[in-house]
Image (cartoon, rainbow, N blue to C red; front, side):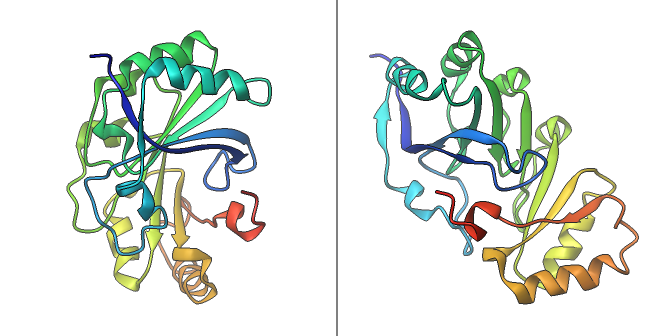
Length: 200
């Protein structure tokens, strides 16, 4: 049986978060996740997906590569899956590969990726080897205790504090925290710009 991957959706949009914010990207969202966060904004990906072979995914890539050669592998949780065959295809097609992960898993294919966003979640165990590969950290902030949780990973730069659902009240809380935090030189207030401007 040919290997297949659970794909929730794929679409062209602008990366709205982190260092690569503003960059046109092809998003490939994988189904399934090993966490069940209350603030998850991609919950359909947990159960709604179709299995696609790497060859079928390659056909999708050819539809979009005239627009961008930057791809974001997101989820769900991409590290639940063996993406080795897909990574080889992406490299062959000259894509720059970014991955978004919760950091609770590690796969060797991460070594072939160009950019890794690790988004640790309170209550989960972060794999040290995955954290060592991180290009940036992203923390979803829903309450004050989340700020203390982020401090466990300091110093690290760049790291983004993201108010859940772009809520102004949470952004104000983060701003007040940054004004007195000893880690302000590493942390940045971040937003989901794709939602602010409804780019998808």
